[in-house]
Image 1: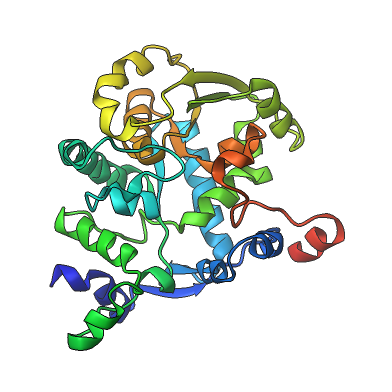
Image 2: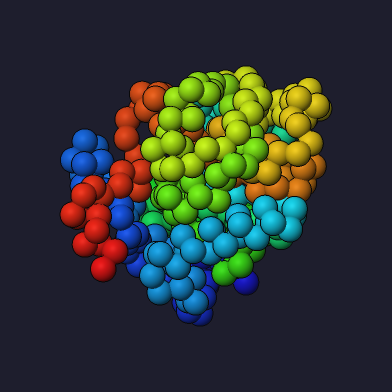
Length: 316
């Protein structure tokens, strides 16, 4: 199999297909109105052939979290989108809202550790790449390739090829759509899963009072433990930061939420393995919990719940 055609092969053989990600209780309307019109394309995502509805992915993630809390087994869950795609392409465009890499040299030096973490993730948890028709444009040929080179977005294609080239496969067991992670973390199901649990938040910022209120609104009262990490360069510097962070984490934590940008992969994998817990790359949702949506550059898809009668009707 040619590495350049890995995603196409998965689609052609029927392993994966594209479908609309419709999740009960989620209202993307306000987010679409506040963003560029083409953002609506991201509501169509990659589905495994064994999954016919978006809610099945929510249930899969919930089951994983609950089972691993109970069994005390590691369960890293990590999202991948534009920043990560640039990072793994040795591209400093990974530096967006936050500084992710000091230099191309720093990225290349960190890649072996990231790829080992990626292989562990694929075996023990869930990877959640943002894959939709708009970032999987087919490769053009000849003159057409030259003329459209700047308009084609092949970032997800390149990322999935990159994984294949490093012996990492996307399967029905290790994949969930990117936005399912957001939707799950704002759900009552997740709030119930962490109720009365010791919840560790590893991030550069945590307002324990506001985070507590966030969960209280969902009738949940986890015990929140905040472990600070730098806002920038965790992805390239984690090997130096790791033990200093790990020693601060109580041994009896039960769930962990991580906000570390591109560094969320090694952080989630290492924390999940060390403490035998679900460790979830929460990103934007942590900003919501902290009342700092501005740090995400505005609202994100699949993070707004339907309200009142509309929410009740969507359940029926």
